[in-house]
Amino acid sequence: MVSLYKKQQHYTAAAPLSERVLKIRESTLDAKHIDIADSLNELAIIYTSLQRYSEAKKLLKRAIAIGDETISDPQANRSAYSILTISNNQLSLIYFKQGRYAAANELAQRAAEIDQKRTNLAPEIVVTDTPDGSVTAIASKQALQNQAQTTWQLAAKLLQQSKPDAAKILFQQWLELNEKIFGTDNIFFINRLIELADVYDIQYRYGDAEELYQRALQLSTQYLGEEHPNYLKLIEKLAKFYSKQARYAIADPLYQKILAVNEQTFGVNSLPVASVLDDIGNFYQQQGRYTETEPYYQHSLKNRQQHLDSQDIAIATSLYQLAELYHNQFRYTKAEPLYKQALTISAKILSALSSKLPQRQPNTANPNLNTKYTAIVHLHTNIIRHLAIMYQQLQRYSEAETLYKQASELYQTSVGTQHQD
Image (cartoon, rainbow, N blue to C red; front, top):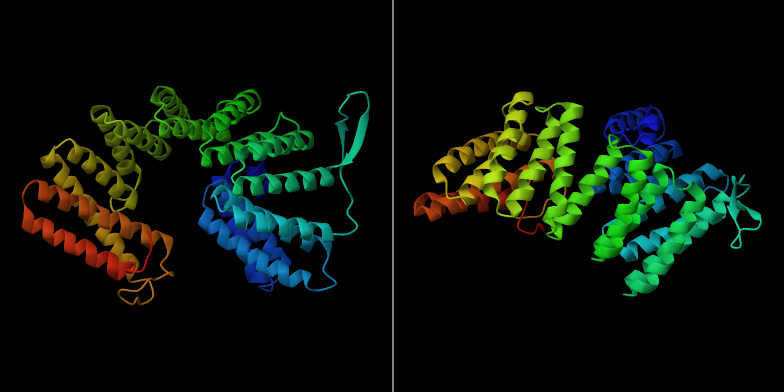
């Protein structure tokens, strides 16, 4: 079932199933068994597709540790090498997406070296055209994949050396190799286009990125259809891509298209629609279009209140963003009760989570804080600070000072003065 969901790119559905498979293997196998590394890889790939990079990296590092120990045994079979190659390549990809090119190159090189050690491979055969088109040549699919990986590494090094034009030539070769491996009428090649577009986007080469995004969109429309989850993800990526360049006239209809499809698929009052409403509200607020922002935030809040517990953190977030909107419009009497409602919810959640965490030392960085707790600390302190700013604007200085102190003390005792934002 996991494989089916992955093939259909339904990663949200695939994640809990893959997590369950990992738990079963961890409970039945030795902690250093290579099959656990295989499950770690699979779940990490799903998390990467969901942009849950921090979680994916932790899984891949575990998989690499298991794989390294496994291949240290002279009797290790080739599957262990394959699994370790995947771990290194996947971690390399994440680092590259995050702009950590040196680390990405090192891992990619290591993956290539491990792959070379595999023996007795039964290569898959593909047919590729020769340059003059007169005859066909038989090539190993594995060889093409190795060549593509090497080409990517070289291109990444050129980027690291501030040689973007030379890198572009190699990235184009990488893309052509992937076209030979996969063809163009499938999701695998479309994903390669998006990966390369993402690299150009990070490098602020928006023209190059846009060309690839648009090509991916054309192929997605043709082969996936407008209701496919990956098509919608690409539309959302494009909307944000144009928005950050202040090309609002292009981004606006894309956001509205995402909203229309989600409303048709999930229902006007659904939780998925609430997330899209937030995005559109943020988009309009970014432009100072506050009057247009308000109904989107209000609808988003209503949807969440309809489906979630009244003390859910998502409701606190919706209340906070609506309060902030009213604050920006100097509608203080509307903003204040919403800030306070959001604070009440976040304080209760924070208190409940605090009791479950290990004892913390004040004024020291605490790397063991879980992601959820840290996110709520940030939300809670931000609400306090914004309410304090509003009180200061209203010349309610005593209340503002109390809140500023509360925010500072909470952050220091919860996260630590040495913590880097």
